[in-house]
Length: 313
Image (cartoon, rainbow, N blue to C red):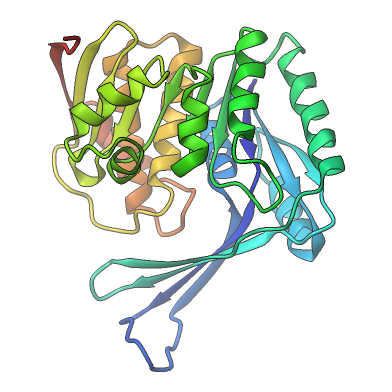
C-alpha cells in the first residue's frame, strides 16, 4: 500500500462561472464538491491507477464528517484520518469559463493540539512499521498549531523505517524537510524559486539536491516536468501540446504518477511520461483531483522525454 499524508485536508468546492468579474454578483453555471487537500487528491488518483492507498492526516467538524463520507465512496482508498476538534477547512476554486483561468480561495485549517499531533504520529508510525507500506507521500500546507519542522520529522521516520518518502510542500516546511533527505521532492517552478532564489529551474533543482533531496522532480506547468535523478542525470518531459482546462490538482496527479512509478520499479523516463500525461489529463478534467482517462491514455505514449546527461559539476 501507499500512504498519503494530508495534514491540512479540505473540502474542495469548484464553481464555474461564464466570466469572473470583480465587484459583481455571479451566477454559477455548475458547482461541485469533493474531498480535497493535496494528499487526498494523490490517494484518489493512486486508487484510479490500481494501487491501494491509505489516506491519513486530520479531519474534524461537520466538514470533516462530509470529507470522510466522500472517502467511503472511493474504491481503493482507506480512511485513516485522525479526528481533530477543529473543523476541516474548505477551498473554493472559481473557474472563469471565458478563459479557463481558476481563482482559488484557501481557508487556513483547524488548529492542531499537541494531543492530536501525538495521535497522528502513532497512526503514521504504525503504518511505517507494518511491513506493507511501500511508499509515503507528505503533501500540502501545515494547519495552525503544527511546528514548521514537522515534515522533517516525518521524513526521518520514513527513512528510519526504510520506506521511500516523497515531499510535496513549499516555503519553510520544504526548506526544513529537505535537510531530512527525502527520497524525492516535487515542487513547482515557483516553489523552487522561493526555496533557492534561482529562477532557472535546473539551477534551482541542483540547489535543492545540495540542500538534501536525493532526487527532484519539478513541475513546469504547460512545459511539462524537469527531473534531477539520484545519480545526477537530468530528464525533461513535455506534452505534445498544451491542454486547456483547470490546472487545480495537476501537481497532485504528478505526485501520484511518480509514487506509482517508484513502487512499480519504473525508470525515470516512464515515471515522467506518466506524470506529465496524468497532469495534462487532470487539467482536462472538470473537477480538481480527477483526470480524464481518455486524455491520459492518448498522451501517455506521446510525451517527449529527453535525457540531458549528468548535471553534476
